[in-house]
Image (spheres, rainbow, N blue to C red):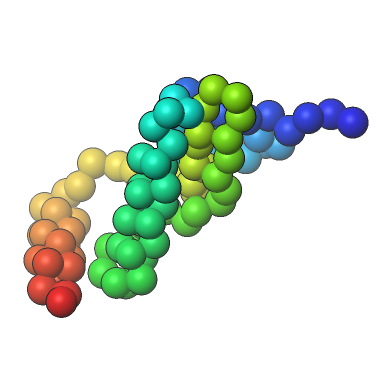
Length: 95
């Protein structure tokens, strides 16, 4: 049985023809990816800013990782920048 590919570095990662964003840390820093997963879930629950969808988390003998939805990011124009600023201000008003 073929073992599924796992990410080895932070950045763009492909598996089965799909693109993901991988966040990879040394195993002794695994708590960082746990915190990042929790933070992304809290941002998503607020419903104010677009966050990448969580796909999976994993660990092996030396690394821990998160796989997230790949977002094609582009430079913001003036209108998009203003919208992002308003969304971030709204986020900071959430109790």
